[in-house]
Amino acid sequence: MESVREKNVLVVGATGFIGKNLTQELVKRRARVRALIRKKKECFIFGDLRVQCCVGDLLDPNSLFMAMDDVDIVFNASGALPHHRLIDSDYWKINVDGVENLMQAALRRHVKKVVHLSTVGIYGEQVDNVDEKTLPNPKGAYAESKLAGETVVSGYQSDKMSTIIIRPTIAYGPGDTRPVILSLSKLIKRGVFIPIGNGKNYFHTVFIANLVDAIVMSATRKVAEGESFIVGDDPCPTIGQLWNIMTKIAEKTPPKIYIPKPIAYTFSKPFPVIARKVKFLTTNKRYKIDKAKRILGYKPQVDLTEGMAITLDWYKSRSLL
Image 1 (cartoon, rainbow, N blue to C red):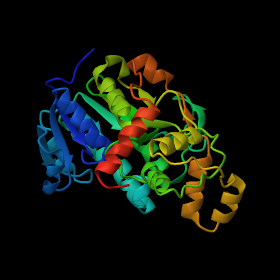
Image 2 (image 1 turned 90 degrees about the vertical axis):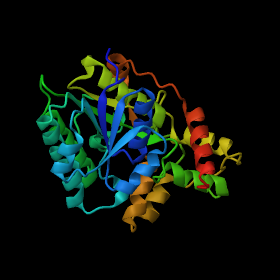
Image 3 (image 1 turned 45 degrees about the vertical axis):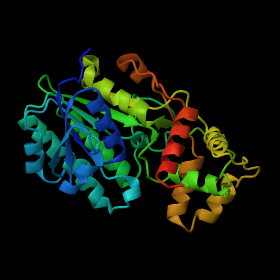
C-alpha cells in the first residue's frame, strides 16, 4: 500500500465542500498539497494550512498545465452541480470540456494518478441496490455531463497514468452549505418541519470524513487503478431515520403527521423545482458499497448519529441555524 506522505498532490475544486475537507486531510497526512483556486483571495479559506495556492480554472488549459508542474496525484473535486442551476450547455462545458482540459494537462505533465469525483446520479432513477455493474441511465444535463466526464477520464487510463473514479452518495458534514441537509436542519430547528412521504424510502448519505477517507484510500492502493467505486455510509438509512436523528439532536418533538407522497406530487406538478425536490426526498436511494469495502478496505468510521451531531454543531457555530 502506498501513502500520500511527501507526495506532490493537486486538489482541483479545493474551495468546495468536498475539496476543502479533502485538502485538510491530505495536509494532515503530510502530502505536499497544491490547491487550484479561481481567485487569489480565496486562498484565505485554508487559514494556517500548509497549502500552495495556484490560480486557475478547468476552462483555462494553460492554468491547469502550470498548476501540475511536478505533481504526482491530481484529485478532481470540481464540477458544476445541480444547485448551481446553470443552463445545460454550461454543465457540459465544465463537467466534460473542463475535464478533458484537466486530463490533457495531466498527460502532458506526466502525472501518475488522477482521482476523479463523479456522482451516483449517473444511475438515474435506478436507485435501489445499485452497484458499479448497473448500467448508467442519467437524466438531465448534470447527470448526463457527469457520466460523459467519467468517459473522458477513463479514456486516459494507461500504464503511464492511472485513473480512479469515485461516485459519492449524498454527502454531508462540516462545511456543507448546499441545500438538502442544511434546509432540513433549519426547518427542524424552527419546529416547522412536516415530512413529505412516510419516511420509509432509503436515503443514502455519506459523512464527509468517511468519503474523504475513501478518496485517499483509492489513491494509495494499486488495485484501485482503472476502477470506479460507489462510496456511501453503512448501513444506508431511511429518510425517516434521518429525520428522527436530526429532530432528536435538535431537541425537538418528532412530527406526528406527514404529507402523503401522492398529494405532494399532485400539488407540486405546476412547479418543476418543487416537484423535483419532492421526488428527490421520496424516492429510494440505496447503493451497494461492497466493491469499495473489498478493494479499498473502506469501512465508514462515523455513523449517522455522530455525523449529524457534528454537522449540526458546525451549523450552529457558523450561525446557520
